[in-house]
Length: 214
Image (tube, rainbow, N blue to C red; front, side, top):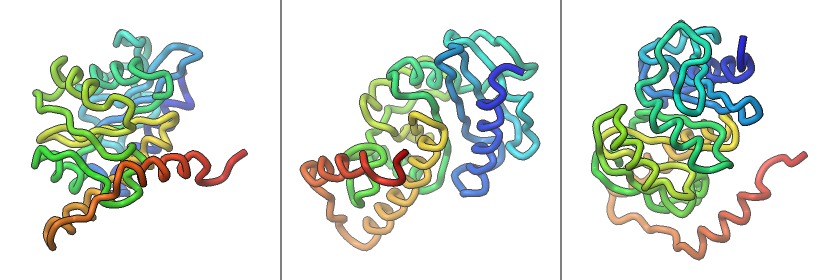
């Protein structure tokens, strides 16, 4: 089976999206590129995460041609492939409809630095303009918005996060859901205090050495 490790990871992290309350049903999607083999593993469209098996995960070329798999790939394959080609540091993409981040996206707001954990994205989470799901227009809007950030909100839709690994892309989605909730709650109380770009530069440098290092 081609990309066995990547396909198993899609199944594992797809289920974690559900158990971490980052999506519901078969919503959202994930992809991982193996740059050595120049192939992408991506979630099949409309398949329940807990019934999905590694063999159900579709393997495609960077151009979107199915190389292995019986099912159709995610309806959002356009922006997955575009993001994987956009930056060499992006090896995994996670897209969800997580509630608090999507709430901010439905307001057509960017997510500002209300908490330092926004640093998982950068000094903010930018907003991509709305376009119908699965379209080239949506892919173009996401690519325009994300730039060098590790996440962007998608207006009236959800959020997409990227990372060097599927673990880092998932963690970014999880941490940004917390920041989105904090922003929502502080907006309910009053006017949130936003960290400065200068402070976020410091946070960005500290994040480079955060956690265990080999």
